[in-house]
Image (cartoon, rainbow, N blue to C red; front, side, top):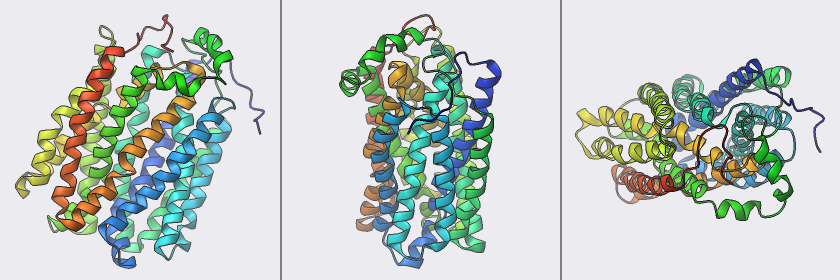
Length: 423
């Protein structure tokens, strides 16, 4: 049922800033939740007597729910106010985390993790679409870089919460602890965030032009849009690599380097927050400056970063133990260079009235071809050979991403706010 929330026609600077702060904070909590499980998965594995492939299936079912929720939430996000749906999603995933205390079997853990994916998929579609209506096209890379700073910082804290709390109080308590900030932020968003009108910043004309076509040909228009397709397919290849590395590196550090669970969590958390945060900010800054003279920058930054991340990742997986952490840190930094630019590229490639649908398509593809399958594939290879070889598969997809983004740069739309966004 449609909400009675009345959209604000002209977003103010204060309103835009409030939205960015609150949604970035909730994205931070989103990634805390997502990365708790890698921090405690060795505990889960021993409690339920699981193989590496079974551990990989946990994220598979999370992503299955995440992916198949996204078309529904994308449809809703293009037709109804997004604020009440964001609040509902945050409260839902907070409740799921509280209910983790009732999980005492592998099947129920799979069910719990799948339910979490439903809530997180809703937020992941609505928030970028809403922010795009607050900021003009040439500012979206900067805004989405800030929004996506939450990925490395939230992931790092997820490792730390999972590894530390799990080691002292049990792995279930780690999830319960993360439920509280999500509930608080949902309430703050309900009170302070204002819903902007669709296309209110920079491309309202494109919005009006496309309204009549919203119901017909939306999916077809996306499938015929090479700028959009290259942004999401390249991102899917990066997500395969980053998802697999993020999921299995805590176990890699425990098994290969002989570290304790909390030590591996602290190391992975520290590297993720320092290298990931530095990479996100650096990549966003480079793309923002470069895009003033070259509209292809939003594609070229992730293309170059994916390609040059391969050598340090290779060193991390197969080099001497003394260089493992150095290789990991450099690889994470380089991979995260493209995080803000690629999301901005996706939003700028489509009309404003179909942004939620476009983001739903992005989420579906990047997870279906990315981190929904990479942890399980790496786990299966690990069961049959070594974890080193399993992680080595991520090098192939990094190179593939570089090729796809390079092709996409040929179709990059203009970024000037006075120009119409590509259909």
